[in-house]
Amino acid sequence: QVRLVESGGGLVQAGGSLRLSCAASGSIIRVNTMGWYRQAPGKQRELVATITSGGNTNYADSVKGRFTISRDNAQNTVLLQMNSLKPEDTAVYYCNAYIYYTIYQGTDYWGQGTQVTVSS
Image (cartoon, rainbow, N blue to C red; front, side, top):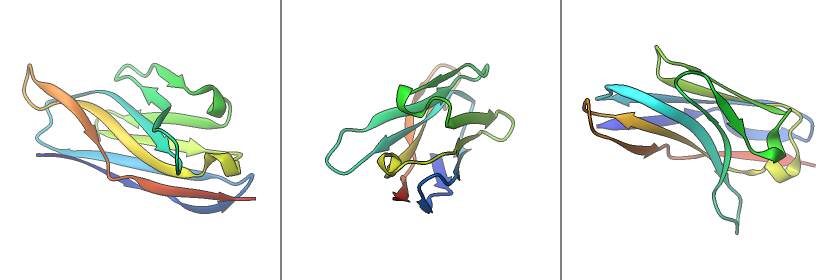
């Protein structure tokens, strides 16, 4: 059984910072791309940032220059440092990872979500 557990959400004023953390645990052979997605009320889930096992990153245009994604391959964790937060960043943030649970078999896993609220 593989689990993704997130932490670090909360309430912050506009212009402030938060750091989200996500740890993968369980029967893990290898973790490929990890990332963060978010879903605001009434909107579809959208990509925030991803990072490959080699460290290549990809960001949504709306967060470029403000958010930084990083990972620790040894610990199977991914972090999202969010600076200069805006009210429009308010959403539930979900951790995602493509994890191999056997040498040849893998699938997408999702965390339970953590609420980020940015007040104006």
